[in-house]
Length: 416
Length: 144
Ligand SMILES: Cc1ncc(COP(=O)(O)O)c(C=O)c1O
Image (cartoon, rainbow over all chains, first blue to last red; front, side):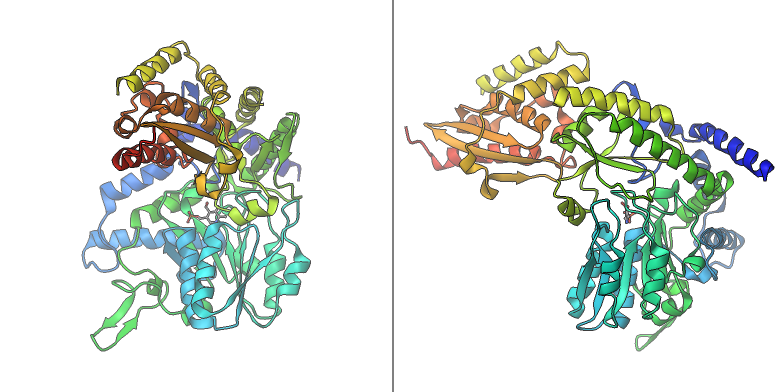
């Protein structure tokens, strides 16, 4: 027991050294060392990720799944090894339940379209919540419009927590899908998805979890969650842009029609009839993003080496430290004060416009995001135009937050 | 034309004094306070230029062949930059406004605020200002 404690402490101390794995953090912005606090939008990349991509192109690249020659076989092996890496990362039962997509957005669109085609009818309902990202709203609106189904939105309270009573009252036999965010990108709320999945399953309703913000922050076990679909983006978890994952339970994926038609996804094609390939290829039309899948697997290995428990503890420390520090600024108003929160601090100061704060922070080398963070309905819920959002990655440290505090104090002085 | 350029050169001179970005922005914010504010009756959906980040309202008045602008924004840095644009363009001839090359923006380091991806309403506002100039000029809207 004691040995374990010592071990995590030393790991925790060593996480500070990981910053140097990210070359971009050496940059200067407007003459000041960059403090990068926008990882919720996209994280930076450690050199093991970029070098894995380069090495793939330098040594292994050929098109996958169709070559008789050795190089193509090696590329195919590398690509399928990435799939296996992802499978174990999320503890999927089968590797063919891991579908490579461009990102979270494409994954949700795939499910909304294919599942929607097969299972959503006129008068049916789809449940989402107020704190969804636009990519977990619009695809469902589109399918509802197409099918004459209705979108039901579960309320969120002032703290930014999903109202489970409201959720419960909206669940019925008319509901054909629940789509919910695992961690809110705007508020940082960690939502009770396990509980929500269990509640939906009592009525045999499948659940899609938008895990864009969760995979870089906490260990995901899709079997323990019993999620029917789980989607995430590589670029938010230290991996490349343009690659992401849709996990789907085999029995659902088998019952869904293909999303895109083309090469790779077929078994036989004649002009009369085409038969489709098996999972996962049925949903991977065309040449896949081989190189970035390998980059993503490198990111998964990198995270695994540090340990997601260590990362989330570190980000929690930053969250607590940062929240304390910023709360001493006069007029500070935190947006999103849920009990369970990930490394996101969204705020406003007095009636200063977020754009003004963001601009003056940028001039002092601090990169934060301002605006509605692709969650306009959530901003309407709070009656605000947007927020300033500082979000953390494993490479951030207390000093970054000190710099944020100093820069913010200066900005607020000028702006108020 | 030369009037517009003269005013631009003046601004470039004024901004030469600042080597710190924060000082520069403090000055821009100060300038925002001199902005000829749009009448409340025009602060409506008809006159709004929506950016994703901040919102801008713009109104144009013709006096003879000259165009006078009033404006406002919900963000004070945006407001300050509008004040600079208005200082340069307002009161000038419609034809000159339509043709104006606003090199001062780049020279004083504010180009980023007028980038299409910034989405603060400023770029659309500038296009709108030039459009007023163009329309007024082509219609020969001269009432004086
Ligand atoms: C919660 C959430 N869902 C979905 C997305 C969309 O991800 P992507 O743009 O990578 O498809 C994001 C990204 O901002 C997000 O934060």
